[in-house]
Image (cartoon, rainbow, N blue to C red; front, side, top):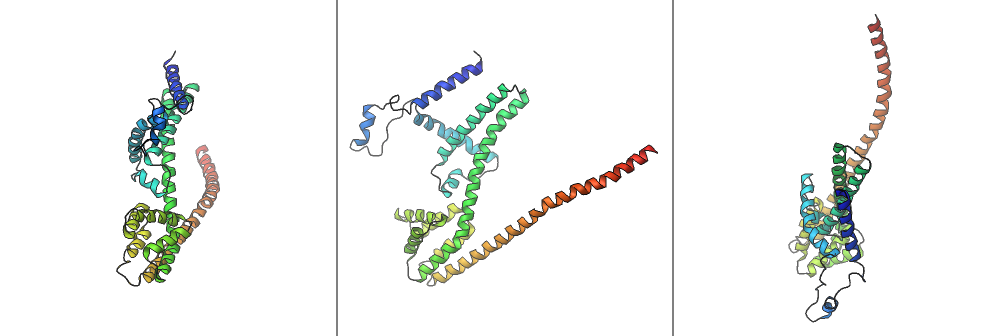
Amino acid sequence: MTQLEVFSSLMFIVGLTLLLSLVRWFGREPVVDRIRPYAPGSYGTGARQGILSVGSFRDVIAPLASGLGASVAKGFGISEDLDRKLRRIQSPLDASQFRTRQLGWVTTALTLSVFVSIALRFGATLALVVSLGVPLLTFLIMEQRIVAASEAHQERLFHELPVVAEQLGMLLAAGYSLGAALHRVSARGSGVVSSHLQTVMSRTRQGLSETQALAEWAELADVPALDRLVSVLALNHEASDLGSLISEEARAIRREAHRQLIESIERKDQQVWIPVAIAALIPGTILIAIPFIQAMRTFSST
C-alpha cells in the first residue's frame, strides 16, 4: 500500500468512529453519566466525553484552530477580533466554534485539492500551488463573509439610528425615564437597533447602569454616530432638556446619512462611465492602429 492509501484509510477510520459516536446504540452513555444531571448539587454539569467522540475532538481542536486562524487572519491584515465581529452581528457561534468550523472546511478543501492534483497528475509546482491555494482561498472567503456581514450590520445600524434617536427624544420629552424609553423602543422595534437594545436591557438587569450598558454597546458597534448619541444619553441625570438634545443629534445623523447617500450616488454615476469609456476606447484604438500599421508597411517597403 502506498502512503496515500494508508493515510486515507486512517482518516476514514477516524471519521467513521467520530460519526458512529453520535449514534445512540454505538456510543451509549454509562449509567453514571445518565443520572448525573438529576443528582443533588450537579446542576449544569454535563456528561463526560469519550476519548473518541465529537465533543472531545472539538475540545482538543478548538484552541489550535483559534490560534492558527487568528494568526493567519492577522497576516492578511484582518486585525479586528473575530469574537467582537461575531457578537456585533449577533451570531449564535463564538470564536472557537467558528474557527473549528473554518478549520474543518479548510481541511476538506486541502484533502480535495490533493486528490484532484493526484488524479489529474499535476506537476509538482502546480500541485503545490493548488494544494495550498485552495485551502487558503477557502479560509479567506469565510473570513471575508464575516467582515462583510459586520460592515453591513454597521450600515443598517447607522441608517436606523436617526429614527430610534427621534423616538427616544419624544419619549424622554414626554416624561419617560431613560430605562423606560430604552425598554419601550427595544420591545416595540424590529430592526438591528432594537435587537441591540434588548441586549442593553439584559445587561442592565445583570447590574449595569443604563449609561454603562449603552457605552458597552457603542464600543461593540463601532459606529461614530452611535458614540455621539450615547454621549448625549449619558447626560440623562445632568441635562433638563435632554429630549431636544437628542432630537438635534438625530437631525445631525440624518444629515450625515444624506451626505453619504449623495456620495454613493455620485460614485455610482462615475462608475457608469467606465464601461462607456472602454467601449469607446477599443474601437478608437483599432481605427488609429489600422492607418498606422499601413503607413509602417508603406515606409518599410520603400
